[in-house]
Image (cartoon, rainbow, N blue to C red; front, side, top):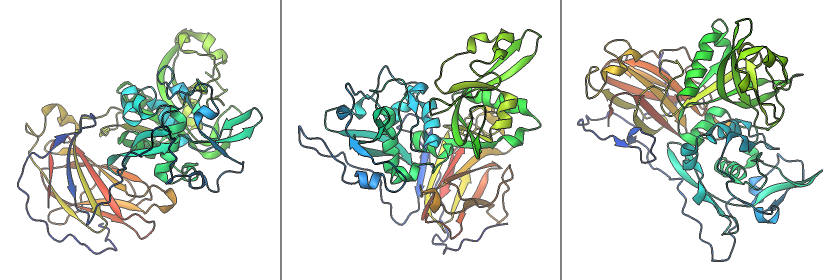
Length: 488
């Protein structure tokens, strides 16, 4: 059933658009080919100009002072210092980056740091967010990061003052830090850049999901999977996770319930999931293992296959995977993982259409910016023929149809202000096109993903929302292996 919008349809009928090849390569090097249609009445850019500071001075960000950065979510008295005031040799990076750098402290940003832990092992992707040119200690106090927000990479400039408190061992960082080297700053500064984009540290303190962090750090597409959906076929889940990791996807997992397990696990909490393996016991039994890291850098699983578990001594293959070190990283069996954890989130730059764990070649991306109540027509060209559609992609959808992933994103970052959003697709004569999986038509999420098998033709997109929340605009991204053209 179509969802009527409570907002006046401001679009009217769109005229025909002559077919043209308007797709261009993503300048950020993602390998995607983008085309854009902007239907907004006006567009207020989030782009910021670099701060100006007199030579020899240290910049202070008047748009994000301590009183704005932290409001009512901290009980301790915070003191704000620049790195050279509490570290002997502050550096942005120390010997590059790795997942062990990431350590969560007092702010509840595990949803962000679990993703950042994965990104730390992918320097090419991390370099888009923060790099050697982003910050120099004692230079001018400016740190420049880039985060993905509502369809574009935006510049985030922060000053380098960080929140500290008086702990048992003296002054300690209240926010995230480097686990591997106390002089390393990139984790702390990037958490502050996220806080500025969201409005404050208190907004990001427990206020997000890993799928939202994936968007901010990569602009990619996240798929959240409830582990109960694989209860009868656990090996399918293992194969999906294994293939996802081997093809470059980033994966997190989480415990949603209130949980302080007697074997080291915490909840609600987000963890990084970074490796799978199959090991073999002396009796010939093969065991599927999953490696997980707690962004706290501590509090590891203490059950079977943990660092000191006797299970490792029963192996004839895989004993070299064991690492006895308290860094927050541990192995679990697939069965224990499915029993203790609630969900996993898989993210790649292009969607996994057939849900096999592998990012599929849906490299053409039509981006449509609009205001709620506007509709848009799109045209899918070609009947699975070159150059629009390569034969090697034909197995993704039934013959004569084209796989399309529709992602709709709302322009609101504060979880409490989300609207319930959705997007319907209709044929030109008004028939509803069903997506390939069952989902509620509206849901209060930052972004939602729908899959379709579409025959070449003309379709009408109808983004919809209810009156809750504060979202004013939408972004629809259509991922496909061929060009999709709008009629405007």
